[in-house]
Length: 256
Image (cartoon, rainbow, N blue to C red; front, side):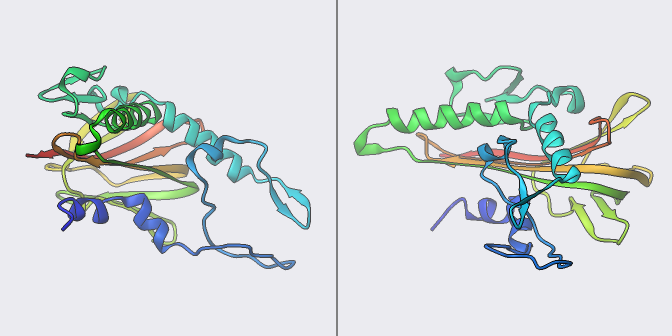
């Protein structure tokens, strides 16, 4: 029995949405033909900017693709302490800007960017390498990102949820299924107003030509004790790469 299955398989929003997308593999487009789907990369390969979309050996410029890369880089490098008002790490029983390895493995992320992911990826890998062959630690890290460019959106709020839809009424974000600690930050008058999932009362918000960056992070393993944490994060940016709305749902627990 997988004691972590409830959390692991049901809570990674980016992976669950990608599973519903059309999968395009080794497809040749005829003139005038279009296909709806997603372009999927390994995380490290996305930053190879020599990548080109090609048709019949002819490069195709893609403003949306370039815009997506730029937004993704901004989102991954961003210090979300500015947005959510809390440091990135929860060290056992206190929050901090730096992880405290003396309380490892009881370190959890309050929010996620590339540096937070890289810390956990390294420290958990080191834990596995240093464990005894007779009592080998195991760990699993998932870090997945999705970019949705150039959308006009409407954000609606219920009593305990946020719902974001586009012009066609397609649902892009829905927090009703979240599990854990919700944080919502909305930029108003150059200041981020903070809300929690327990009390959401936000006027309807309409934004034009935004880019949405969604991140799912998961970490679990035995590491001397059973640890699981996950974070689903939705970032909504305007054309100037300014974050207008940020939503984070995270959970960190351990099992004896």
